[in-house]
Image (cartoon, rainbow, N blue to C red; front, top):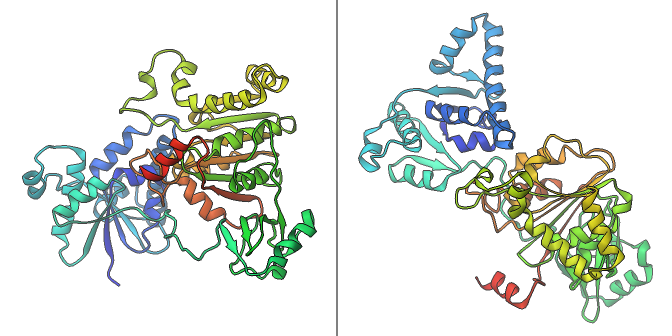
Length: 455
């Protein structure tokens, strides 16, 4: 098979700093305009800044490796980086820098404006002209960038290495499972917490560890959960925690996994109003005595193209608008408990002595999180690399709970298959320390549920 030439956009590198290693034996080209943009992101403490620095280190290490192999000096190898490329993987793939062809006549005629995106497209078109017998592809996570390239006859595609596979309707997932025999449901209730061996229930689908579902027979049903070795299935009871009572089957299943301290990683997904954050908070508060601290965080997604620095006040005042949904959920719990109740006052006391901390996610990174319950809200706005960075901070006796709606994404470079929450669920499914519950029914209000379904 003939090698392809892949030209990378800046957002691909900032999304996955190891991307240059993932094109097998094919050639990877980086326009000089991309290097200029990556260089601007090297300073800072966000994941995007780390990715920019890490990418630079990968390239530098590859140059040093080839220098050692053929004893050429580093300056000479930097020149070879442009003319001959450098090896970055074991498949024979090489990476090149493109310094010429930044003003292709097709781009100038079509768009006119001299911006970085147009220079990158021009560079790719020039490469395509210089190699007419080879396939040249622009790789970008910006759909508008891809559309511009396609309009000029340049093949363009998204970066899909860390995207989950297309949804398979037959793969195991929490949902309703129908069986024809009522006696199977009866046996589950008789067994109670001990559970019934999976093979005795003769389910029509394969189940995975910690999967939750509603088992429905013609005249009976049961809320069920698979044990963490997928050997038995037990019933789940509806229980209230810290003033919050489950209103539907999925909420009851969610609280069951949230209260299980053997599960160090939990994901709750669902549309707006299904109770994801509220359930996670209630379960965490119910277990507060077993942990040193409860951390609540969410990624800051800038509004109207304004960074957090544009907001007035100190750090706490700046992040308050972004963190307000978390405080709103705490207020719901306090109202359910009774504003003057001892439990509600305990929440205020926990906030006061920082046993309960609400913080922007950017300020959590870099810490070692031991003996904590860490709730990350709106996790669908994180990249797979950011999710990995957060989870790898988990220390001893730590639990991590991620909530989000994989269909409601604010980042222009993520979608329902490439966001970090969906990626984590796909990769962690079946692990004995992980559980995922998808909440279906909106419980905020009839209007909220109607809007989520109709609009």
